Length: 431
Image (cartoon, rainbow, N blue to C red; front, side, top):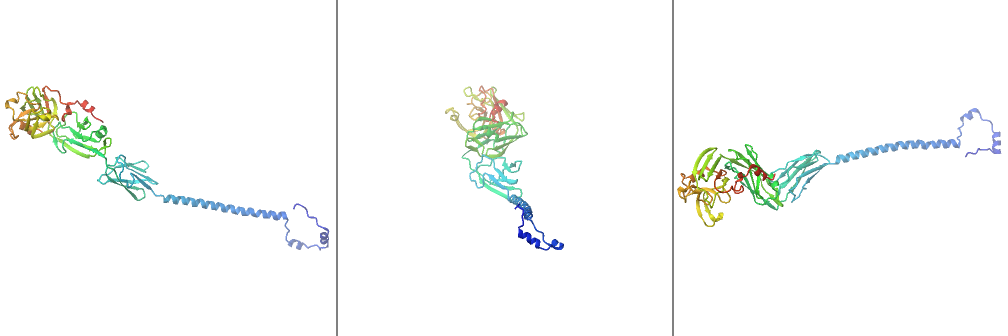
């Protein structure tokens, strides 16, 4: 290749002997291709073929991408919302110290309902993304709950769990009795069966409201006693509602409340009696007007009667009074004291007295600290002062003692918190 061809002699001779070709023959003869031309043509063929192959590869690539896109869409379409509940379905001793939570992945929540086997329901709220629902309050202890949750465009999911029971519990015993009617001095007093260390938590779980409305504040007298009162005596005709939401409130380490209830009390007419032991006389006022005046006998110089504001906390038509129960040895034991009404926990009463001379009342203070009115044995004589005062009184009535020669009664000695100033009363609140 690249070297010119030189004909030999025989080839030249043969050429010389040949007759010249006609023009027509020359034109009809097939053209002769040089080696370079053939290769040039052959070299062009692969180029055409390659061009064709390149177009086919592009089509295949586009097809693969389309298939991948379709596959992705199919996978996305195949995803379904997945709901999870805390505590998990089937939990037998779930904590009651945390809220219930419902979450969804690959979707949004349409509705959530949590119902206890006691008929209670737990309200809750969704986050902004509507993927998490959280109960506003914790579940109750010892309760079986059913959670029904549904995501948008999906079937509802149900989970069931049971909370554990607390190991140790406490309750609060309250005064006055539910649906009772009391005098204007009756506080709402709660005594707990277990000492409370977290006073704030317990007090926050208790509400006391009144109609007509008035500010009401709690005061702790001890780690087992919490009283509520307004600044001044209740208005006559007031309705009071005590709300106890102590269930599962931890009063002290490992000890939980059990109550969840509302209780209503009523305040009746206003009756305030003032005992002046320098005059040995008691004046009874009803709704501001004098109802009666009775001669009385108070504590002698060795057994002076507490002074201050006291509230009737118990009433007995007849009761036994024994000196040994109040630290006075065997000085007296009277089995049928008539018309006795308790003023202090330590043993001060206003009561009828049939064993003393009638002349004592209104002239001498001879008792062991109680306030005595003339009465009759058997508590059935309606003409005597003891009977009349008892008949006109009710729990929660106020009895004020002055000029007794004794100091003011301790506010915790009975239902006698009115002896605290409003500022001192509020200082005893834990919230």
